[in-house]
Structure formats: C-alpha cells, structure tokens
Length: 187
Image (cartoon, rainbow, N blue to C red; front, side, top):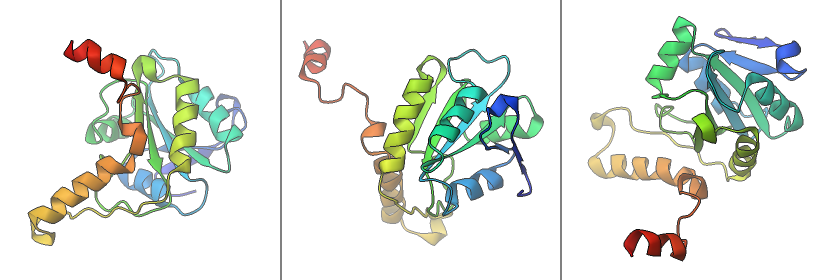
C-alpha cells in the first residue's frame, strides 16, 4: 500500500476495497492514477455526522462500480483528516467529492472536483448517479499555474474556466434553463 493510505477489507467496507486517505498528496495520487476507474469518489465523514451516505454505502458503490469508480474516505476525526478537510474547504459532513480520475491535476486539487454532494443532498442514490456522470466525462487533464510568475492573467482566467467547465452539467443546478423556475424568479 502507498504511504499515507491504508487499504482495508472488513465488515465496514462490505468486501470492497476503500482507500483511507490521510493527506493531500495521497489524495492527489489516488485521483491522478491511470488505472482503477474513471471517477474517484471521496467521502469526508465522521462517525457522528448525520447524513444518508455512510462508509458502508461507499463500499457498496465501490464494489458495484469497481470498473468505473475508485473509492476513498477521509475520517475527519483524526488530526490529518481534519487538516485535509480544512485545506480542501469541506464545511459540511458528510461530503462526497467526485473527481474525474486519471489525469494530471497540477496544484488545483481543492478546485478540481467535478461534483460535490453535502449534508442532506448526500444520499446513496445521488452519489451513484453523479459518480456515473463523472465517470462518463471525457478525460480532461488540468494543470494550473502555481504562481503568477508561471503564467499571465489570461492563463489564470483560462485555467479557472477550465476547472468550472470540467464539471459540465454537474456544476449547474438541476433546474437551470427551466422556464417555469425562471418565471418564478423573475415574475
């Protein structure tokens, strides 16, 4: 196993292999790996966190979609898990972040996720649906400039746009373009 990640198979993971991630470098390697599925599904959780998506649900998803989804979990009750969650801007538990796996991310791990589900929206059905959508996305390698010296303002804007466009329809609200919702908002 990689340093910083433990692989385990026990009753909690229902026979599936779920990586336990403790630091950002390990998470980045997991997402950038070329093999093991087109989508990386990462659950940020604590045993006391309310919500519908649990580590058992993650293991079930990983087992059912083992050809397209790789799974990892971050236990935010540990010091390293808490630091990782804070570094990535996780504010609600449970949270599932889905990444399009298999391509370079550069230094943009905190913003490179293709979809995120948190709290009450983080259900097994929603995560399964989003994971399938992320796995079906074309592979888009993204390398962000790490400093202003690496690129001009135009490159930084293009990079930011590339991050937001990577999610495709997943970054839009479900009712985007709905004329009835537009009429409700505008009158």
